[in-house]
Length: 342
Image 1 (tube, rainbow, N blue to C red):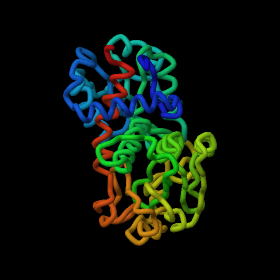
Image 2 (spheres, one colour):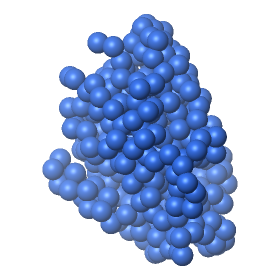
Image 3 (tube, helix red, strand yellow):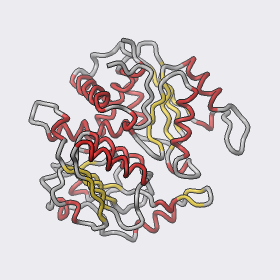
Image 4 (cartoon, rainbow, N blue to C red):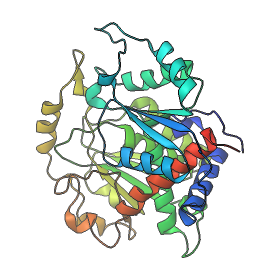
């Protein structure tokens, strides 16, 4: 399958066959970790960080190195870029010039670097319009495709018969996306990506959240349509426990409310204050006991004691470290398929 030159801004942009091809290569790269050392030989991948990270920078730098390339760290503050309030280089010029240097460009722009929801998505799409190399989202305000691929890779590893890897095992399994209270006021990106890619692979999706914490209506509708196309179920609830019943994968994470952006500003402290009052929205052993021996998943960093208890996050059914490791291998596969030598 030829994915050379393709952007990855959300997994919803790729076909099911293309997603399976990426997962298949990621699994091979995990088994033979250092066996693909010439794929990105002499090539550089630009990592453009509006927001800091832990796993994203580490995993992309390691990924580029392990397939023979180099990942270069960039920050807007060290570049003369045009903004709404400052003169500088346009996205057209920056994208075209960086395309002459690098084999691909990754961009990370999350909630607190945006003045409104969707601004990060628009920035990535604008770079994709002008750049002549692939644009990869390293997490933005709307989506996180690398995390989505790492998620389903980890769930498949846990749910497949021992020694096998079959994404088909996810079909008919119930994925609970449940809001968790916490002090981080997180964007919707990882949650929405998990809903989309999970529904593409035939999972039943339930979204549980308090009233006032609805996700992007467009993404919710895409998820609903994905479920219809695979014969899966899609449900939403404001009840704190009912969604756990029958779940096979539980994803408990805080996310901001639609009211987080007002007057061109992200109101983080208000979001935290509001969320911290809803302390019953925590994933704990009592709720997990309602599931079908579900695995617990989270993209990290985890707000322990708020989104989930230590007992669950560090328990025997937690796949958080496997999913975190899979970021490395999924990103190697993405770079190899979209930027690498044949």
